[in-house]
Image 1 (cartoon, rainbow, N blue to C red):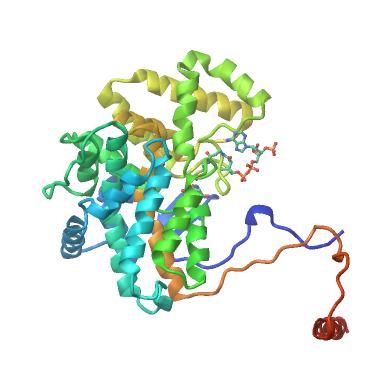
Image 2 (cartoon, rainbow, N blue to C red; image 1 turned 60 degrees about the horizontal axis):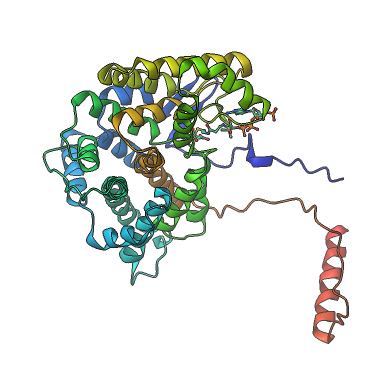
Length: 400
Ligand SMILES: CC(=O)SCCNC(=O)CCNC(=O)[C@H](O)C(C)(C)COP(=O)(O)OP(=O)(O)OC[C@H]1O[C@@H](n2cnc3c(N)ncnc32)[C@H](O)[C@@H]1OP(=O)(O)O
Ligand SMILES: O=C([O-])CC(=O)C(=O)O
């Protein structure tokens, strides 16, 4: 038996520095570039937080205006991307649709460049790519939902900021300020969370000096799973299954007896609650009030209190976000794509950081397969025999 200390799932392993955000489970806090996320959610438009994540500082008025102008330039759904989206079957998961759209954007943007991350040597170009992706994603997500509903594309509106325009392109209606505010807060809360699975995936891809789009496409794949971003969708399936607050007890009896995971609860880092939940729950409460849906509050509260008292496991951000997106009118399958549109800011900030201070990410593993064995009938030829002898001699030297 080996004495190697295996850190399954890299749990508890610190693999690098980051200046993008700090998750502190001890104080239940989350800082983006030093600012508490609650303060950002209460005061900033999502565009300003994107600027903060990429550049390390909140924007001045002029910088915000410039970012907004750039975002507006790249908001409309590109006709080729629309064609690519329409090639994706209507019953495919929308995460696959967004992944495909980003892949096409990357292939087109990098055509003729050798398709690498400029070996970390062109951060300005990669920042420009990040801004274009951030600007392009809402139209991709919005059109995906609309085509599944049999609705036409809605063109962006230049008089609306990012969050309001995202809702406009999704629903084709002027969004209410209360809804825009709750949605903007959710985007800020979803933007960044240190070395979570999708961000780490993006950093692994970046570490090979691959390109920014490949890193984002890989990150989308990691975000799709229900143990990570896919949990916001899964929360709504659970809400629908339970139906009413009065069913929570029996539903939980069965879920726990069958060892089922209750999505929207638990976290790899936070063990006493997720720092973002109070802010998102407050945003959900404003939506519950706005849409007159006390039944949602009753179900939320009943499931939270029953699960916490039985298991001592607390809700994560996906628990309030799922019902919030449902109330806003997003289809359940669109929730995780909305998460992509937010998290692309954090992913790209990490891609830029990894590229600027790169080391190939390549951990070790402990082999636990069959002992060395040999293919029947194999006879080493002279050169293979010499190479094997060479390897054996080096192994002996290293052992000395
Ligand atoms: C934005 C985000 O990505 S936030 C995370 C979103 N994901 C979810 O909501 C999915 C549900 N939650 C989970 O699966 C887990 O809590 C994770 C994967 C997020 C983190 O878990 P880990 O740190 O890997 O711990 P792990 O999954 O091993 O759980 C530890 C124990 O708590 C239990 N547990 C953890 N979360 C849950 C849950 N949601 N429901 C039921 N049991 C749970 C596990 O079954 C395990 O029990 P055991 O020790 O008896 O086997
Ligand atoms: O940090 C994690 O492991 C998951 C998470 O909450 C996030 O990515 O927002």
